[in-house]
Length: 72
Image (cartoon, rainbow, N blue to C red; front, side, top):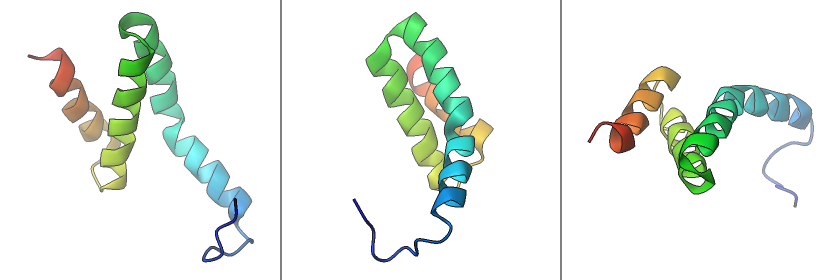
């Protein structure tokens, strides 16, 4: 799949930056998957990264999402 509105130069940098940013949440999700199941872990990791994309600081995003499931 190509995205014509993105220049081809810098794709590698964008990939590395993106993967580095999500890696802590991937690792957290793997841990959560063992404890709570794959579907929950994937949903939680996606929600955290969504909130980060919306501008929340990563740790705050994590705390918000954790509160939805683990603190009721």
